[in-house]
Every structure is written in structure tokens, then in C-alpha cells.
Length: 223
Length: 59
Length: 244
Image (cartoon, rainbow over all chains, first blue to last red; front, side, top):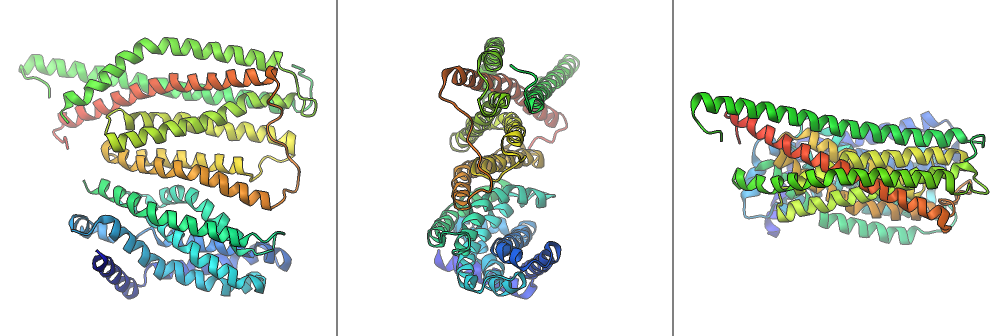
């Protein structure tokens, strides 16, 4: 089973590298938000510094969500999804592999890059490391939940709006604890340690729920 | 209830919107029930007609 | 499952529903009558909030019901997926618009209560935020049923959405609670007025019961419609020879 897992990862990873695809969308979207936000909010540096962690999280979240849309689409369209479902590897493992690749190719790179771009929002330099750690952790949950949304809407024509509607509620706790873990002592008491632990718990919960729920959804589309 | 109290408009609006939304909900549910019943009767009549003319039983 | 088996349970349901329905309506109207009478005439106005506290009698039951109906939906979805009971996913689908209406009313009346009380139409505290998320979950659930044509497929996907959402509601409440308790609110706001005094608690409980019976009454009609709609679809598909 482990070899099946790694082979799906290898296949999807090389596809992603060759085609570019989601990582391009993700980076583009991220930069758009980060650049337009200060332009829209005005030059008040103190304001920007206060909202910087939250804004970076929102940009990360939206980028991951929007780039996960097509996760199962090509495999669904050319029938390889059915082949994967019928193989001896559990569909849950395939789901986990695909979500992992998505994370490795968009969520994780953005999570690492985001704190660096924090200077565009006058991010407090002391927060760069906590933000990075929280984002790397949380982005896994973001990718997993986005892939769940993609699995649920794979057969649908106008899946886009529906994905957002379904995944946004799930993103709320990730975002809240993610920002809390990134803000350090910015809002008074420093609860970032506890928030980070809860964030890890959320990631673990997503790791369990996503494969089973996604596989169940994908199977429903194939019968 | 003191109708001249301040913010009475908010109280009245709340009860009004409750009444209208629940009313609209009930109307919609009943309207759907009626159209389903009507369509079912239509299909049953067609089925009975077909059975009379062709002597076959409906699936 | 042959079509005869499939409709054995629904037929029993139809018979049960026809006998029970009038009684449920009678009880519903009676409860609303008593609740509104007690709440609007017998209960006292709040010494600080004045008459606006009476909004509680439509706001709180709506919120309770929105949560209760979602629980019904989630439980029905679980039963549908695990036990494959034919009425389970029909019951879940039928409950959604009713719950969504209650949820919307909870938010709307909450805003109308909040404006005179807190001075603002909206505040992102734990309860309001999780109510708002609940509305999104209801809308997403209903959208799934709209988007997928095949009822069997739609019911499975919708069930997944309902169950995952059900897990998420307490999580959202917990996380926003945490978030909000760390960011001291700019204005001080209080929770739902006094609830201990019986002259206020009684109408509240009566109204809560009234909303529950209203849900039951509407739910029964909606389930009946849904059973009928499935039968229509089956018949129409059989007629055109396209039965799957």
C-alpha cells in the first residue's frame, strides 16, 4: 500500500511539474491579493501591520482553495479515477496521495513564501517565523479540505461556487487558529503556542476525515 | 406591551419578518405538495388509460 | 431493491402522516397562540432594554430550531448512509429548507435585536458567526441536491456534506469563542436578557415548542411531496424507457 501511495504521488507530482497548472494559479492569486490589499486599504502602515497576519492567511487560503478546483477533474474525465477505484489500493490512499501532491506543489510553497512577502504589508519582523510555522502546518489542512471540496463537486458543471460554499465553513476554524498562532503577542496575551497545538489537532482531524469523506463522494460519482 | 416605547420599530419588524418568512415557507411547501399531487394524479390517469387500451400492466 | 419494497415504507408513512397531520397543526397553532399571548402581553419588559427584549421570543426559538433541524438532517443522513433506510435521505432533504428559513430568521431577528441593544447590526462573536456558518452549510446542502440529477447519487453526496458540516458546527463555535475571548470587544454587549424569571422563561419555552411543532408539521408535508416527486421521476423515466 505504501508503494501505491508513493507511486500516485510520483505520478501526480511529475504531472504537476510538467504542466505547471495549479501552482501558477496559486502564486498569481496570492500576489494579486497581497499587492492590491495595501493599495485598497491606504498607506496607513500601522493598520497594515495589524492586519498583516490575517491578510496573509486569507491570501493563502483563497489561493489554495481556487487551485484545488481541478484536482480530480482530469482523472475523472479520462476515466483513470475509475481504474484507481477498482485497483487493489484503497481509494482513500489515492485521495491522500493526491491531496499531498496538491499541498507539496501549492500549499506548502506558498506557506513558506508568504511570510517573506509579509514586508509588503509591513508585517512585524518578529512574526515572520511564527507565521511561517503556523502556515506550513495549517496549509496542509487547507489543501486537504480543498481536495475534499473538489471530490464532492467533481462531477458537477458549475462546481466552482459550490466548492467555496462547502469549504469556506470548514476553513473558518483553520483560519482562526492559524491567525492566532501567527500573531504572537500582537493582541495582548500570547496564546500562539496553544493555538498552534489546536491547529495541529485540526490538521490531524482533516487527515482522517478527508480521505474517507472524499473517497465516499468519489465512489458516489462513479456508480 | 407599550407601543410607544423606543425601538418599537425593531420589535415590530422582527415579528413581521418572522411571520412573512414562515408564511412564505409554508406556502411554498404546500404549493409544491399540491403540484406533486396534481402531477401524480395526471400520471395515474394516463397509466389507467394506457392499461385500458393496450391491456398491459404498468411497470 | 424492487420498486414494491421501495414503496412499502413510504406508503406506511403516508398513512401515518394523513392521520397525524391535522393534530400537529392544531397543536402548532395553539402553542403559537399561547406563546405569543404570554410573551407579548404577560411578560414584563426589561428594565434596561425595554420592549426590545420581546424580540427574544422569535429570535431564540428560531436559533434553537435552526440547530435542532440541522441535527435532524445530520442524523437522517447518517441513517441513510449506514442503514440505507429509504426514507432517511428524503427526510434529510425535506428538512433543509425549513431549517435554513429558521436559521435566516435567527440571523435577521438577531440583527434587529442587536442594533438597538449593541448599536450595531452585526458582530462576529461565537454565536453569530457559527449561526452564519450554519446558514452557509444549509445553503451548500440544498445546492448539492439542486446540482445533481440522480437522487441516489445526490443523497449520498448530500449526506457527506451534512455529516461533515455537523462535525464542523461545534468546532466553529469553539474557535470563534476562543478568538473572540482574546480580542476584547470594543463595546460591551450582554447575552440574551434575563431567562430565569418564569414569566419570561415560560413564553420562551412555549415558543420553542411551537417552532418545533411547526417544523414537524411542515416536515411531514415536505416528506410527502418528496416521496411523490421520486415516484413522478421514476414513472416518467419508465415511460420514456430511460430507467437507470
